[in-house]
Image 1: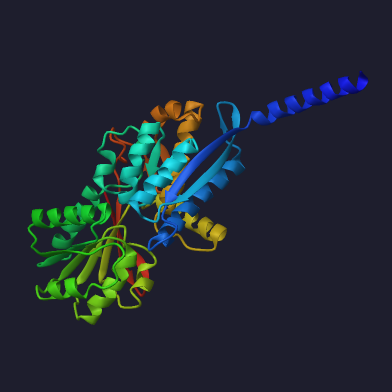
Image 2 (image 1 turned 45 degrees about the vertical axis):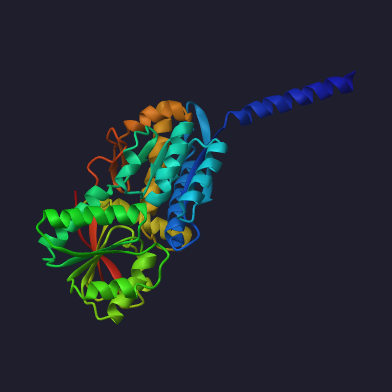
Length: 379
């Protein structure tokens, strides 16, 4: 009988111990980006930004609704492929994540957003700029960067008014991002009184651009705009040099990375490339961004490529909404996310009724001596 009582007491102790551990709230945050393929360096950059935020939140001991939260990162690779992107999204939905940060590319973000919307899971993209993403009416879709209307429009105006472009050629990679930003650029060039002398297209895995560049060379452009990513822009710049095309080269945030000079293999002239990154900080905000970059390098032994700070902020914005709501339940914290006002390393984050960032900034850059140099922050 005593043995039986001891067993019961032991079981009760285990139950009580289990109840203590059950007080911990496990919060699963999904992240999706291309960690394989031509944009893998950007996808890994994004994933490290998410991991940095998760590690810091766990170290702080954040409480949500009176329970200590334990954050878990569920990272998926979409390889910049829309089909793989929706498969990754479905996997996260099936895993019942509390929220999703991603995807990197507009072409994967847009189809995935329907799956998250249908499941009621909030999604914050740190880098998808195609306007369609937040115009489908999904209450779960947010982004922390300015869209292509702003980005392409600003670059188009800059090409005509500041760079004094007289004959401007446009190339895009036919992705949702590349074609979208190129369309907005071309519209803005024409609105500013500039002349578009040719429109060509390639794809996001191409390496040979001889035919389209030879066609454009005959039109003698003084500016070539490329809507796409740095992995394609680098070889394109090399081939422009080989063909004797000395035009300025412009692009959106997809080409505006620290890797571009390496991908161009030393063929970029100082000041030849002008690109814009969605987001940007100046004044007091610059210190926060600089501090983040130092901490990132210390943690991962590599420099920030492009979007890692926006991923980091997106994770913290999502968790801030959970804390405010006192719940990690998507249905309960979604209203708080929609009205958030969060000061992050990329600036103040608040969303409009579509889920777009309010007063989104853009940063214009060029390259000198193989290094990226800031020209200006514009809003």
